[in-house]
Length: 125
Image (cartoon, rainbow, N blue to C red):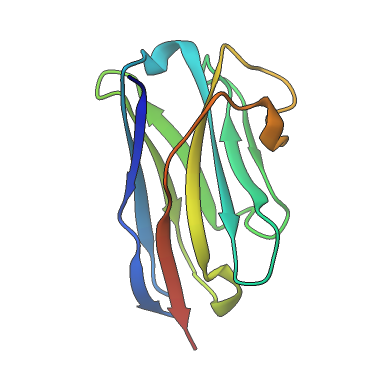
């Protein structure tokens, strides 16, 4: 059974940092691309960041470029999203997702095979 479990969310102030983790079981993350998406209240879920299965390419939404960094540690079977300079507009539930050997269309939610349940990030002004 495949499971993706996010952690690391919380309540922070504007300008603070958080690191989200996505612990994966039931699959070998070395063979999977990972994406992070977020959904704010009343909004549709949107793309945040992605890393190809080889780890050689990363992609970011314009709204987070330069502030967020995606990575994955295949040895730990865990993905990460380092979030710096957080702003109130970053408040959302953050989801990680995995896509088998994907290098393209990583911004597209429908491409992903497995999803976590999400972790809440709240940024106060």
